[in-house]
Amino acid sequence: MLSKIRFGTDGWRAKIGEDFTFTNVRYLTEALVKYLSEKKLTRNIIVGYDTRFLSFEFAKTVATIISRNDIPVTITSSFVPTPALSHCIIELKADAGVMITSSHNPFDWNGIKLKTNEGVSLPEKETAIIESYIDDSKIYNLNEHELFEQHLSNGLIRWHDPQNSYLKSLTNFVNIEAIKHSNLKILIDPMYGSAQGWLLKLLEKSQTTASEIHGSINPLFPSLHAPEPIVRNLTESSKLMQNNQYDVCLSTDGDGDRFGIIDNKGNFINQLEAFALLVYYYFEVKGYRGPIIRSVTMSRMIDKLGEKYNSTVFETPVGFKHLSQKMLETNALLAGEESGGAAFAGHIPERDGLLAGLIILDLIISTGETIPNLLSNLYKIVGPHSYYRLDIPFNNAKRNEILNRLEDAQFDEIAELKVLKKDTIDGYRFTFAGDWWLLIRLSGTEPLIRIYAEMPNENLLQKALNEGKNLVIE
Image 1 (cartoon, helix red, strand yellow):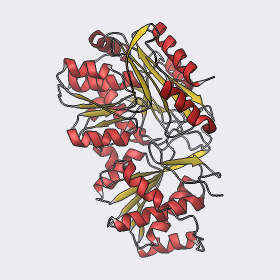
Image 2: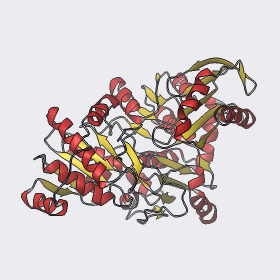
Image 3: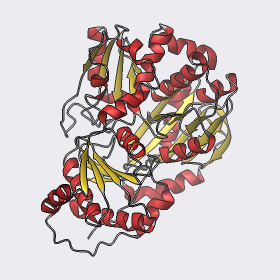
């Protein structure tokens, strides 16, 4: 029996060969075509893909199904980071985009992200319409390879390489010549993903030394649990940093929209600190003022920076589509989420891990400081903060039981701190005196319970995480 296609936090994702099949991709694409036709969004659709198993073949299937409905398709001539696809949509004035990727998920997953003409993820109310249009009774009797080639020859499908234009757009936000002449030693870890080679190309022919690890196509993501730039997946990069005297490591996830940083001592900089450094750069170094958007799981360091620099901070649920929308509504300077996504005013209103990494380089060069020194300066402003996220696999059969337990949970105190309130903006969040917090939510992209906490020290952090864990594990 066909599994029902459902969109999560960002797109539809499923295991290859189980639910993510060519048949289901066809069903979803036909539903998308019906949606686009009704909305009269049929001028041009951009299709891109990452380096995962069969991503290119799935992209050709999507392009063929769309074009057989007389809708022009532009397909990228090679794998692309998702932010490059979003930039391409805007540059070519396309009506929508389709990205074949499951981002940071494990190797045996794939997925589809749908983008609007603004380059942002399609809102939930729109993906719900597309879901309702899925007809799993249709039988396909067509030679897709032959049809793809036919549409290439008649111009309904055309190839496009967005790399040069996209990379040029990044140089509007940093002093690229200063970066190229800085003599920095930079390690780049694209985690076998679709950002591989892109920053290397931007930094070629310069005095800066840039080297890449995990810069080949290998859909198994060997030595990584998944292509997600978090500490457990960056052990090899950390060792290289320690042994080769690099100044910084810039990492991106499987489709290049999230970023991670390792400092010159080989220490991983968590995503909350990394985004706080970006906000610090905009406020303190560049002198900008304006709204900042953060998700419920992002650090309260951002609020403290907003207060110091007289700038409003807005909060949204998890899922960058919420941050993108708020960013557009408020003309915000920056938007950031806990999972390593950041967007920048004047660029695409969507996550861009490559640009985030370049801005970190600009911060280092502009201040002449190392990452540890920059963090020290940051903590002088915001005070001590300790953060961690636990990811716990769970059986979906127990989903309602877990949610009921969280719904019923009431505490006067957690980790020796008084509970001031409990809210359900996204998941179940307990806020304590001092604006410290514990949040438990079910992932919208994979079968995981995520437990987040931010506390004034490591001792209270571990206590909060343990109490959160006890809530969801019998």
